[in-house]
Image (tube, rainbow, N blue to C red; front, side, top):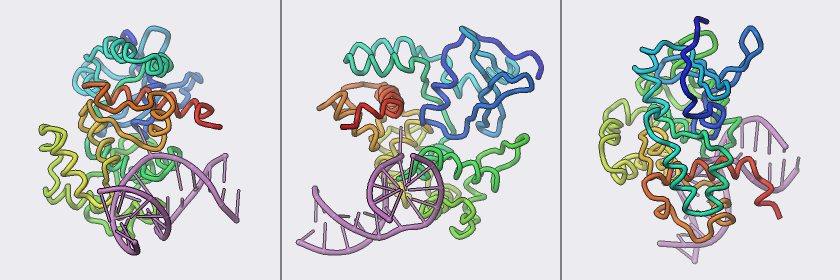
Length: 275
DNA sequence: GACCAGGTATTGC
DNA sequence: GCAATACATGGT
């Protein structure tokens, strides 16, 4: 590796890349045993790690400015967002302080959609395994052990039975349905990206296996509709215990970030919900 | 061997 | 409309 790009750490890789919004980043040691986060987005491979107040990225300034800057939502002021959300309630402040280095990534819409189709009634380790196999089997190879996310066109050319090696269960046919709609143009992801969130909700839910929750996740993580507030089993528990009576509208335009703080906090504090 | 996992589609009242 | 139930698979 040549000398990595070194920037003031505006986010924490462990918190941002492993808080449940993305499933294809993993931590692995280099030759000297130091741990790096490694992953692929939009067909580009990146390694990065945090050292104190610095973020080290194994890419050039051009690659950073040309792609990763946008992916990491770099120029948004998350300190300000966190201050505002923390002011709303002590419980939300507690969740935000638990992982202040979380950012909402700007992931590829198609990958986010598929990821959360796979996520339904499923657990995180298994979701990661299914997506890993999906990319290894049908994504373009990028580097040793890493592939791009398969295009809608490639998946549209398959029959649901072809996806058997994924062990995705009944979700395989949902992926194929989404791919066929996206490939045919019947589902226009670009148009969803530039339209109001209600249009996206209605369009995405035409896909088999996409209901309100999966659509909300795709819109937040893939289309960066930051007011979206996915309510899964963890969030229902979290809201009941931490913010009873609250709804998404109470958090304003950054409801999605509030949701991510609460989701991550709840997942790592399961004792809060045991009785 | 139940029970659960970042839900949804289907069915029945 | 809203409450059950099935759904594939693997981890606990």
